[in-house]
Structures are given as structure tokens and as C-alpha cells.
Amino acid sequence: MLKKITLSTLSFLSLSAHASVDISIPKHINVLAVNESTNISKYLESNTLSLPDGKSQFVFDIRKTFKPGSSQATFYQSVPVIITLEGHNASAKLTTPEISSEYAAQEFDQLQAKDKFSLSSVNGIDSIESDNLSKGWLSLTENFADASRMYNKDNNITLGVIGATAVTLPATVIDKPIVSVDTVEAVSPSTSNLKLTQDSFKKLSKTEKQNFLSWAVSNID
Image: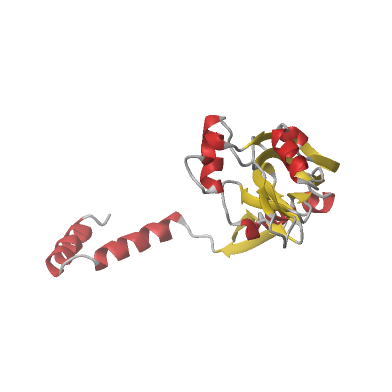
């Protein structure tokens, strides 16, 4: 009997599936795109943005109405900020400066992107970059996913897992990998050749079978 043993990758996949970069975000910011996609609900739940391990990216802005309900009410929408970060099984909390007036809003828009937010309780984040996603990209499209793609192309940014990511496995997983065992009957070469010959013979025409039998009989030792 021969045994064919296949190592299962289920344990590795289950560990990777739960690894993410979780960013806690305040309620007043609007996430506009994540990893060149506007499918925000795929990543955002209960004010936590769960990004895949590796290099990820998201775009946000802040929108407020000043003096609501009055004839002087004004709506404010900040310049979008694009954040690119890389981490593995990481977490952080994002906060932004308070915008309590139209003057504060104007000042906020004049800030560099890195000064428009801060991260605290940082764990496992290896790098972070930010920029204002301003007119250069948004003038060509109103879609924030498309604007992100153009920004990344211009800045040579590739999202996803960069290089090989080491995964630390528990000793129990390393010592006792999950395996599936398929039992395969051992087949001798002669039996295999006979079966091939029989299969081929069945496909021959009647005349070809007669010719083959004549040849076979004449070649029996």
C-alpha cells in the first residue's frame, strides 16, 4: 500500500485571515475610499477600519455644517487626505484636530496632510505616509477610487503585501500540521501496462482489432 500525504494549508490560512491592521476612527470623519475601492462597508464596521496586512491605503475628509438652521448656515467639506500605511497584525487610533468654526476649517485646509491627523496606541505599524488628495487628481474625476489609482500611479505606490511576510505559528501547529491522508492502492508496472493496452484495444475498429490480434499472436514468445 502506498500512502499519499498532503499537508493542509488550512491552519496557515486561518491565521492569515484574522491578521489585519485595525484603525479606530472618530465618527465625524468620512472614509471615501479604501485600497482604490469605494466599497467602504467591506472594511469599515463600528468605527473600526480593518485593512489587510501589508501596504494599505484610505482616503477621508471632514464635513460640517456651521450655524445650522440659520440663514447664515454654511456647509464645509475639507480637502481629502490620503493615508498609506504598512503593518502586520497592527492597530492604532486616529484622531483629528477639532474644527469648531469656519475660521478653524480654513486653517485646517492649509495644514500639511501629516498635521491633519495623529495616531495613538500604535502597535505593529511599520510605516505611514500621507498627502492631500487635492485638485491635481480630483479635477479629472469625482470618484475617489479613481483618484487614488491616479495618485498611486504618479507616486509609484503598490498596495498589497510587500515582500514575504513571516507568519509565526504556534508550536502545536508546527509540530503537528493538519494532514489529510489518501490511501492509494499500489499498482505494479505490468498491471498498469496491461490496462493501457486494454483501453487502447477497445478503441480500435473491428479490422484494426483483427490485425492487432494477428500481430500479437505472431509475436508471442
